[in-house]
Image (cartoon, rainbow, N blue to C red; front, side, top):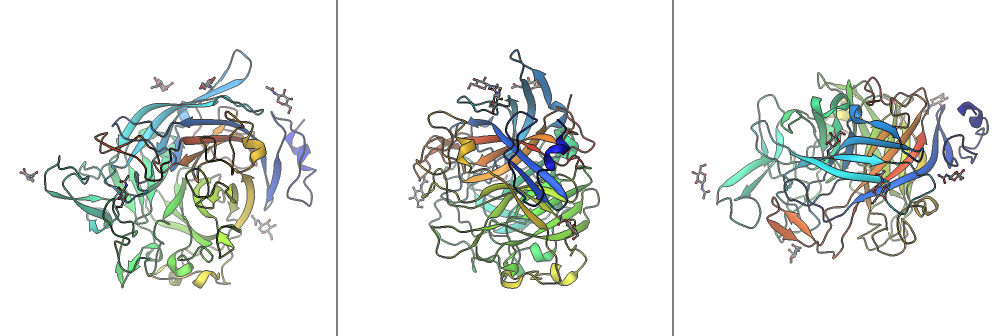
Length: 528
Ligand SMILES: *[C@@H]1O[C@H](CO)[C@@H](O)[C@H](O)[C@H]1NC(C)=O
Ligand SMILES: *[C@@H]1O[C@H](CO)[C@@H](O)[C@H](O)[C@H]1NC(C)=O
Ligand SMILES: *[C@@H]1O[C@H](CO)[C@@H](O)[C@H](O)[C@H]1NC(C)=O
Ligand SMILES: *[C@@H]1O[C@H](CO)[C@@H](O)[C@H](O)[C@H]1NC(C)=O
Ligand SMILES: *[C@@H]1O[C@H](CO)[C@@H](O)[C@H](O)[C@H]1NC(C)=O
Ligand SMILES: *[C@@H]1O[C@H](CO)[C@@H](O)[C@H](O)[C@H]1NC(C)=O
């Protein structure tokens, strides 16, 4: 059966259920603009224990972002006749264990080898397996490691914009092994990772939340350049740039480390570039704020849905486009004020106009007071019809608003946002994992989904370029380093997360079919 025939069924409704020509029942066909996206089935899961440590002896939290080494992707046929995929992937931790305050975590990336066997009918044992290969520490241009501490100062390097930085005494932990000298280091709250042109050998981009900035590193983890977004994105307090995210340090005993706590304009605290993706051509990097800037309603969950997408040329660093993306909203039974914004945690450019996006609620899941998440999706947005506001200075200067108090300027057409794949669906989840399977809601146990789904990458099902449109989308969680067997400061200090919880690093896999007109792998193909 050819694929086109099943789309005949999808006439008026955007949601139809039809039999599958692929490997499992098609769960959902979604229309967005003139394009169809198909959610076939959940096909896998895997995990790395929360107590696992990296090459430096520090606790691993692998899911703030994920990027795949395309030449490493291999598809082989197993003895039982099913396909097995192997690849090397790079995973990004957040700013370190910070549930009790920010720390002098040295930002880094992890390299893993993964092995994956699609199992549409479910599996008790994990079928997405992870082997740690390497840990790469990130450094400034002089080779100094960076820090996860909140910003209290800045640093200047020739050829760079002024960078957010943090001051600390000794080695930045409570012990005195490093002597009494104070240090100033570039601080990074890392949220996205993209290897360049499909391979680590070309280096990688990371975006952060303090700046919010875009940082380019070489293959060894050394910072080589940075992009500062328009002034409308830069946090200002009392008329001055202030990169603090109001995230006090571990054991500081403070509720706020800056006054006022929220910036007067620019990115909201801890709502920086949570999503970023290189274009399929590799010529552009797109970055998306987690939610609206302060001047666009960013200080409240009920008004912060109009966030902004930037497009920069990676060679010249020039701004090549800017659009408004309307984030989805949901009703949270645990909150008085609704509807609330499902802020975004990652994007994946399928072209220069269509994107996958992870949008989710917060404070629900494993380790949270409530286990039932209401909104955790891989959705699609499309900027074909959206207004490019990059050339309009009133929107881009300090405090420039597109949606004052959360009401969008009617001169602006936002991106088209389409609801696609619900990660919380228990009918799919329960096919995987031990006992009663993975689940959203219910008991606080190891098979309960974590709160924060933040990393997304794809393997083409054909093991080459995905020209048939079929991909395996892998999503991973940031577990906030919440473990009772924690290690920090190069393994020298142990900790127990104050919550008492021990989370795992979780990954889920979905088979999806994308419009064949999109070529998300661009010219950078898989290995074979
Ligand atoms: C863009 O607008 C055209 C004309 O109204 C419409 O047919 C198309 O579906 C729209 N595309 C998106 C992605 O909204
Ligand atoms: C999975 O289930 C489908 C029916 O939904 C069936 O056709 C197929 O043979 C099953 N595959 C395996 C490997 O059990
Ligand atoms: C993954 O590991 C499990 C054991 O935990 C094993 O049963 C399974 O076959 C492995 N799958 C792959 C694809 O490596
Ligand atoms: C990771 O995979 C590569 C390519 O298959 C292989 O050469 C390497 O030995 C693997 N490393 C580990 C630690 O498994
Ligand atoms: C402080 O730094 C200076 C210069 O690098 C060094 O000579 C000195 O030993 C350091 N002091 C301590 C207490 O670490
Ligand atoms: C968390 O912070 C509180 C207050 O500063 C402190 O009493 C507690 O020991 C800290 N917990 C951990 C695990 O460091």
